[in-house]
Length: 193
Image (tube, rainbow, N blue to C red):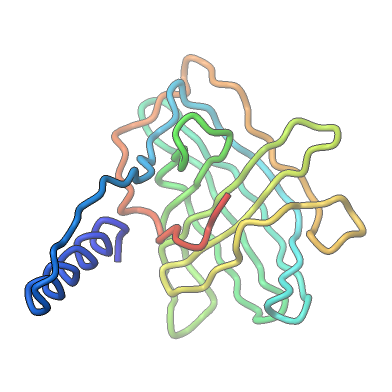
């Protein structure tokens, strides 16, 4: 269910409650994030591991590349959860800035998994490249099945966050994205900043 569907559902529920109780419904404007293809578009690469305390402290490994090229999107993700054995592998078909004018990037698409009950899933990978030294990059992944490893820091090595590197590369003239279609992405409710 998309964020727009959840918002409409909450509004309809609020209207129903107001109608049955005789209460007055006050509408207050809320700003919703407008995920957009970065302009000018860039690309992101990365690899490493994260600790998953929700699963007893095991780790997951990832490798990613994604971005815009020649009026389209390209890239690939590879994710292995060593506790559950889940392996997710697929092409990037959407590349977004989830918080307009931020340094975060979301890579989305449809991937194959080794889960017989869900052999194909939509994914959303959230990344943040922080200027080194001293900054900690961030990584998170969400699948359309509800599987989530929330966005977390990647280091420094030896601590419980994980390790690795995310690198957001500067745009060049060929880095142009196509029309954005966020339906290619898994829900990002649990992938916070």
